[in-house]
Image 1 (cartoon, rainbow, N blue to C red):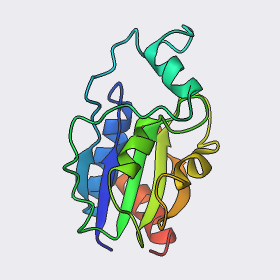
Image 2 (image 1 turned 180 degrees about the horizontal axis):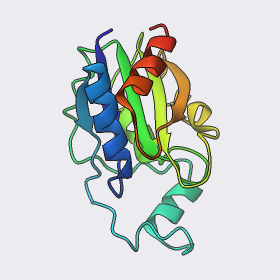
Image 3 (image 1 turned 60 degrees about the horizontal axis):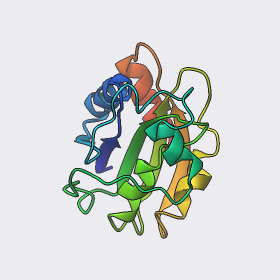
Amino acid sequence: MNALVAYFSATGTTAKAAKALASATGADLYEIKPAVPYSSADLNWMDKSSRSSVEMKDPHSRPALADTDAPVTGHDVIFLGFPVWWYVAPTILNTFLEAYDFTGKTIILFATSGGSGLGKSAASLQGSAPGAKIIDGRLLNGRLNESDLKSWVKGLKL
């Protein structure tokens, strides 16, 4: 398995999970960064006019990326991590998927969440990566044990 762990982290929580997963699997690591970083006010889900609320209400929203330097080409398996927003992946993940050709690749989702599961993330992302196989992975919340992560990845039979 030649894997890449690509992740978007608004507050650092998903970054910790991504780094633990990359370390446990020996995968390369890539951070998906927005062109304009999210502020605390942008992430206020209780404010219907906050940036994240506005983006998540619009299924066509595609926040700009800071770069398109992800080493996608050299990897067969992409672990794609994100915080769950409104029961799905943030729309910047659609931007990321649409910026590259994932044909023939397997994308395994992982997420962090304060209260919900992966929801309909796989379905909401599939149209942005035609030709790729997107599968739900799991939540990677809290303390992450390296041997548990290795067992989970081994169980995927990639």
